[in-house]
Image (cartoon, rainbow, N blue to C red):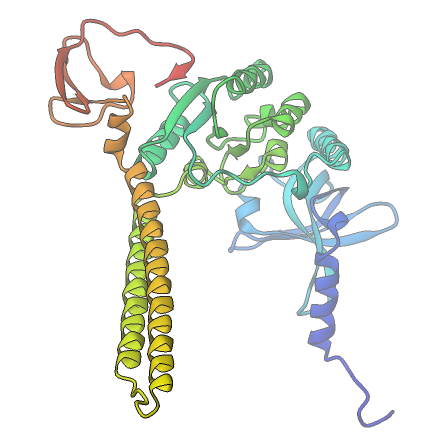
Length: 407
């Protein structure tokens, strides 16, 4: 062996093999059928066991976070379906299955069907990253599809208003679980397409796998992929993943995350505009300072006075250079001034009072709290409606609730 022959360390080889396995898509989210043996659950909550069939076996591990979701007591001899990813544990070089879900074989048929549907839709390109559209930076209207009166819907309303109060919100209530939920969700999504929306959020809170099954419905997944408006899927919590998440333009792990993805924070926008305006003003000041200094240098420049013709030539050159510099200075000044005007216009457009000047209004209660939902208003309650040129004081005589429309 040559002295400079390249070599691996044992740790380096194991890490390299782990990287190779982790980069193979076909070894992620696979479903494995086998018999459990040597099952051990430690005080940490982690479970270690072997899956085997008539001729082979593989080591498996299920960490405490996933093991807590098991709905049956695992024992040696159980025939199970285990969903997970294959990788190598670098410390000993043994490849094993990292299990995220596990069910008895009879119950796991649904997981097999779900996996088949996922592969089918993926093969058709419905989950491709290349077809996902960017969300608008400054949306004018957001559509929310969620359960009527649900905590998820309320959470999205509150966070969107808090972050970007000038955006319009349209609510499309729908069943989110149960036998009729897939069709109801599709109809709500179809109705939302007829409104002037920039983004649609399809969301609900977390739940068991069967509670989220509506969002694995093939027709609904296809409707999400075919939507003419960008869709954010916010179904469940961080660990919950549905087929709608893969088909949507963006997946949010929670309803709160969906609100943050859908709209910018008004405070951040205003801060960035103010910083940009300040930088522009500083640049303009520095440019004008340098131009004035250049002009002064030309003014103080010595003039040859011996021959009369040279004197006139130099004087003409100085005048010409001064004119060029003044024109350049004026052009740069006008350019910077125009940029400042554009920034001021953007700031003005983001000002809620500009909305009033375009014919809109907002309503507050007697304590000055902004009213954003009909549920916050009671009959006989006094309200104030703020217009661009004054305030109207009124008393509620009745309420009319609409299933679809602006809230």
